[in-house]
Amino acid sequence: MTTPDTRRPRPASDILRTALRRNRGAMIWGTVLMGLYQAGETAFPIALGLIVEHTMRERSLGSLGLSIATLAVIITTVSLSWRFGMRILQKANTTEAHRWRVKVAACGLQPVARDVDLKSGEILTIATEDADQTADIIEVVPLLISSLVAVVVAAVALGLADIRLGLLVIVGTAAIMSVLSVLSRRIGSSTQEQQARVARAGAKVADLITGLRPLHGFGGNHAAFRSYRKVSTEAKLQAVTVAKVNGAYAGTALALNAVLAGAVTLTAGWLAFDGQINIGELVMAVGLAQFIMEPLRLFSEMPKYVMIARASAERMALVLTAPPVTTPGSEHPAPGGNLEIDCVRYGTLRDLKFTVAAGEFVAIAAYQPRAAADLAAVLAANVPPDTYEGAVRVAGRELGELSVEAVRAHLLVNPYDGEIFAGTLRTNIDPSGTSRTVPEAVEASMLTDVVALHRDGLDYGVRDRGANLSGGQRQRLSLARALAADSEVLVLHDPTTAVDAVTEQLIARNVAKLRRGRTTVVITSSPALLDVADRVLVLDEGAVTAEDTHRNLLAGDPDYCLAVAR
Image (cartoon, rainbow, N blue to C red; front, side):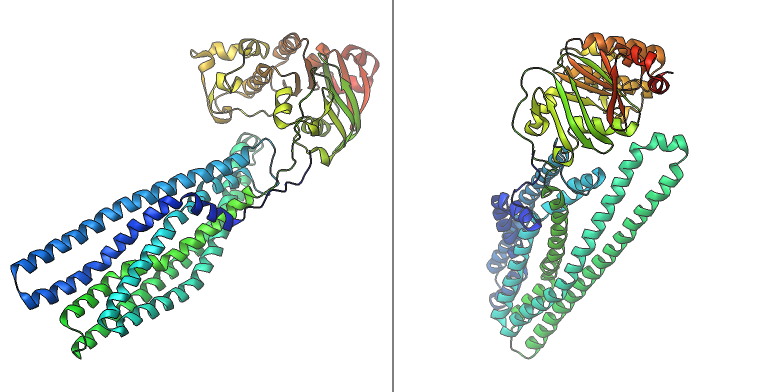
């Protein structure tokens, strides 16, 4: 495995461009329909002014009927174009948000972790809220263009009546956008900070839920609650800041739009009073001054949403552009299940060296729990090979040369705190539904009493994190899952710490029987598991200091006897 990933980076601008390019067709149709809607909205007062002028001249029922039919066509166009335009854009928006959610989730769930300084709760927030806000760019651009169409149509129509009215709209719109662009940048930075703080609060909640049982056990729940309240208050205060900036932006936009509309109305009134425009043009100008408020509002709000989408895209880029901690190899292990640790130095491990032959059952008695955890992390490939010295070989191949799929298929390391998922006993034991050894795994892990206890048997419902199971039941369920995988090499880390001595004895014998002929390593201090092993390696101060059967070590090594005898 090598570290650097030389993929082209995907900054926020690339994410937004990808979203726009992928939805080009939907956006074109949405822009056409929304432009037609805005043009129809703007055409209404124009048509009304022309109708008034024309009807006043001719005063005929035919002209009146034609005018009513024209207005009906405009209203129908406005209604249908809005309905179908928004339907196309919202479908594209929802689909694009789903794509980014899946992409961010896939990055978080990859077997090789990414080098990103974010907790799972933060990644969850990015995969939900930030993905949604980034996809909003699909609607923002067509609405921005269609609003611009309305402003241009209004400016042209007013300019045809009097050039001063058209110039007033153009200059006023430019002035409004200049003022609001300053506020929109402030919104972008404030929103990005708010999203980061909300994500940190979400991560804190995830941590608290994970550690709720032990927190209650030693009375640390009140301190944990105070810690969460602090980060939550920071997120709340930042949200208030963003709300203030948004309020200032909306208020400023509304005030400036109202000033422009008022200026157009007063100017038109003055021109009509002075005889420079007729009554129909006055009606058109007054109507446009009212109707132009809506496209101006949309036009002035769009930069804010663009900045929010960009801020969210930058948050997503933190995950999507983060390089993997390591780049896996592409080799596959040779037949056989031997495991070799060759002079490994990592954490508390000091030149650790031992070999487990194919089909052998070896127990490792670690005097320091930290050394046991470091060894399990190295074997599980949770530690990049370039961060430790020495080599780990599986069936003759170094771990760094193997693909992730090959490592997972050939070598399984079951941690002492194996996760339990919401579902059933069966789906927790055999998540893929392909194992042929589920009954044997259930029996070997002594999970039979849990299965027999419930009417649904293996289909008994399990809550998230095994909330409706005891500690011993959760541990046995995790062990059953590891055994059902039937991997060539199985490493178990403290698989029986939460069960009673009698059950532990039965589990030890069952595991040794089930795994006969398959390579098995158990990192444990359990006398029952140590006794059924073919040999025991004593791990002290990060190195193997003794090696023999459990009973010989008990008889001849006082330190070993003191460490494992119960």
